[in-house]
Amino acid sequence: MVPAIKGTTFGEKVTADNAQSADMLPILLKGKDSAEVKVQAKVLSVCKARGCFIYIKTAKGKIYVKTKDDAFFVPVALNGKTVVVQGMAEKDKESKEISIQATGILVM
Image 1 (tube, helix red, strand yellow):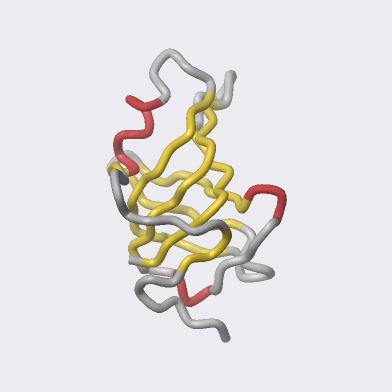
Image 2 (image 1 turned 90 degrees about the vertical axis):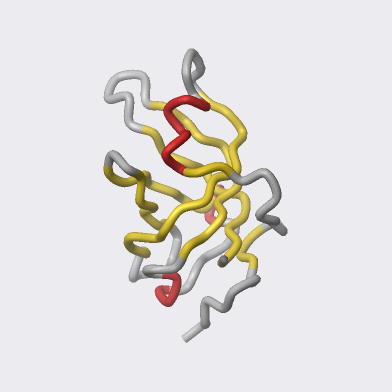
C-alpha cells in the first residue's frame, strides 16, 4: 500500500502556493466552461480499483477529480486527507456539475 505522506506529490509537481478553496470553483468558472485551477480540499473518497479518481469536499457537496489521461494514480490512503489539486476544471453544459482533470495532486 502506497502511503499518503504530507508533502508527497502524485502526477506533476504541485505546490500549495496560491491554492484556493474548492468552494471557490463556481466563482472561478463563472461565465466559462473551463479554467486552469489550483484548489485545496479534503478527500471524501478514492477509487478503490486503481486510484484513478477522487471526490473532494466542498461546502455544497463534492467534486469529481479524475487524473488527466490516467497519467498517474493515487493511493486509497489519500481518503480523509487534505490535498491541493491542480488541473483543468470543467462545468458540464447541461448538468452544470463541475469536475477536474487533475495534472497533479499534493498531500497537505
